[in-house]
Each structure stands twice: as structure tokens, then as C-alpha cells.
Amino acid sequence: MPLDTLNLFFSAIFAIFGFIGTATNLLVVIPNAGYLTRIAPSSFLVFWLCFFDSIALTNSALVAASNLATGELNYDAASCRFHAGVSVFGNVSSILLCFGLTLFRYLIVVHQKDIPKNFVRFYVLGVVFSSAFVSSLPFMMGSQEQIYKMRPCNAHCSSDWSQHDARSSVLIWMCFSIATITLCFVVYAYAAMAGTILEVFATVKDVGGGRVASKRVKIGNDRNETDDKKDRMSSAERASNSVVTEGGVSSQNNQSRDFQSARKLEKRQHGIMKQSIVVVGAFMIGWAPYICS
Image (tube, rainbow, N blue to C red; front, side, top):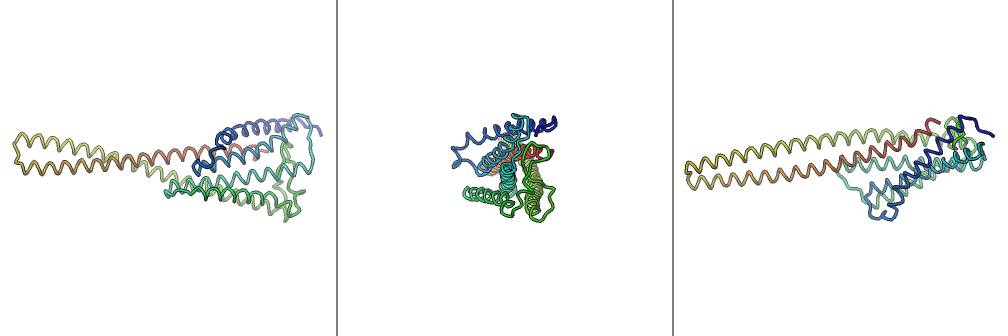
């Protein structure tokens, strides 16, 4: 069946964004493939998020590229159902990995907890099995012909969310629940992380103000010591002032260490927050073509 101008436009959009997105994800996947045993837990999740995103994007781009190459809709029901199943698998995996990435960063920033590497591996395995189960549900329930179809834009195969029969509704409600829970948690977690970072900023300001006050006290002590020397204070008084001065220096050192620790915590949380915003933003942009179609 020949494609009209609008369908060719959608196919071009899907093909271009699909291959660009795949290339971008592979820039993260390929260089880090040999370092999976050494990278941080959150980076481990980012690696697999990019990997499954590249699968979903490549799957959609192949259908769109085939349409552009022939100028016709190469529709085969069996192969379209396969592409739709792969699309659901990749998209559900991405959503669950985004949930895990947000959860781990929430625990690190808000609750100051480190995530064990083994736990992250088991989480990824759970994501794979869960996504495979969800995407295979239509085949197990015999509803694949009703729900796995070519989308109206004729640019990719995916789930038909307008179905109302009981067997199709199982997949629809499962995907809807996963997406809704993830979205609500992402909003809550990033609000909590933003609040924690603001508290760290306030702490850094307070510690910095304490440092300035400590310096002023030290200058005042030095001036008092000079005046006392001029007045030829007794040795007992000089010894007493020496103890006070040492106490001030010790207090200043403690405040300096607190200030440095607060600055390190601030930089760590700020970096995690920026990276998280970039990942979630890229995830939303990547989903935009599916929503528009």
C-alpha cells in the first residue's frame, strides 16, 4: 500500500530520531561495556537504560526506514506483532530502569545510603524478566492480534491502547500502572532531593559564616595579645591567653573541616541532581514521538 505525504513524514521523523537516539545511546554503551564490574551502581543502571533504549529505538527505526526505502507500507501482521512486542519490552524496561535510577539517587542524596553492587545487578535482572513477562502477556492470553498493531501514523508497530476487551485491558492497565507509579515517584523523589540540596546550601552558608566569625575572633585575640604585651602582662595571664588562643585555633580547624565536608557533599549531590535531570529529560524527549503518533 503506497504511503501518503503525512505517513512518509512520520516515517522520516521516526527513522531520523531512531537512528540518532540509537547512536547517542551506543556512545554510552560501547565505551563502558568493558567496565561494568567497576562502574558505580547508578552508572550501571544508566548503562542498561541506554542499552534497552537503543533496542526500542532501533526496532522502531527499522520499520520506518523500510517504509521510506520502498515508499510503501510493508505491513506483515506477524512481523508487526513481533516489532510491537519488542517495543513494549524496551519501553517497559526503560521505565523500570528510570524508576530504579531515581530510587537509588533518592536514597543516596536524601538518606545518605550507599547501594550495594549486587543489589543493582539483581534489580536489572528483575527488570528484564518483568519486561519480558509484560510484553509476552498478549501472546500468552491470545490477544496479540487485537492489541499489537501498526499505529495510525503507519511509522511503527506498537500496542493499540484503544482496545477495550478484557484480555487486551490486562496489558494496558499494567503498562499504565507502571508508568503512573514511576511518574509519581519521580516527581516526589526529585522534590525531596531538591529540598535536601537547598538544606545543604544553607548549611554551607552557615558554616562559611562561622568561619568568618572565627577569623574575626582570632584577629581580636591577636590584637588583645599585642596590647597585653605592651602592658607587660604577668606570665600567668599570658599563659591563660595562650590557652584561649589555642582553643580558638582548634575551633577554627574543626569548623574548616566541617566546611570542607559540607562542600564535598554539596558538589556530590549537585552533580547527581544534574545528571538525573539530563537522564530524565532525555527519556521524556525520546518518548515524545510515541505520544505524538
